[in-house]
Length: 246
Image (cartoon, rainbow, N blue to C red; front, side, top):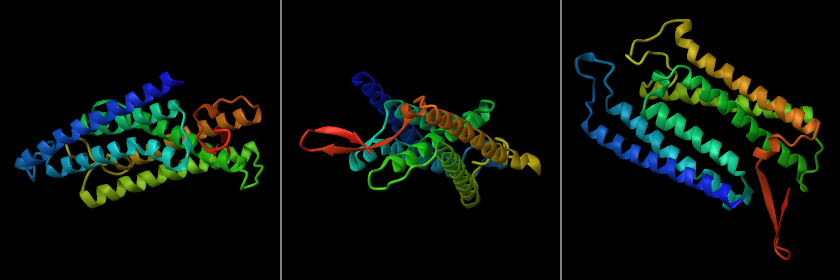
């Protein structure tokens, strides 16, 4: 157990250092980059591009410590496997995807990340509804089918909210998070412009559905598969100093 916890903490520290170094690099690029692309060369990154990248690096660094903060403030147990997956996802989405332009350079990179995010959000939704289902203060007895349905709806809703966030950022800051234009800056037209957004929503749904089905089978047949990634609140018994999960 100590080895697993150490590995997850070490990974978080490494990813955090990567974000900090990237933020320093991006800050330098903000100072050196032009406000507008010279000769209308849209392939050249300008100050606005690096400002968005800097904000993402900062948000990513803060988000890395979110599980630790929740654990301390809410007495929340977070499996080390979930922390590892979470850290790797942030590393891939921000450092590889944005800083190193993997979204453009690696085929289907964005699709793979969205599929994984759908599954992760499904696991998170499963944790929430299971916590309520087992809470002493909220007497409930939900069927595996309802838990699976809630898990699916929860994950798909958050995936949709993320697409709204991407659209809002693109609209306000004239960025290209929804990939409605090529890396060269050439705007796509018609179905091609909608392809990235719709593909993200579809794979989010498939990832959520997969996790919901796995959760249903696990609960129905008491397999314990998804419970390995389940978050749990811990209630401390001050006299016996034992942990009891809601």
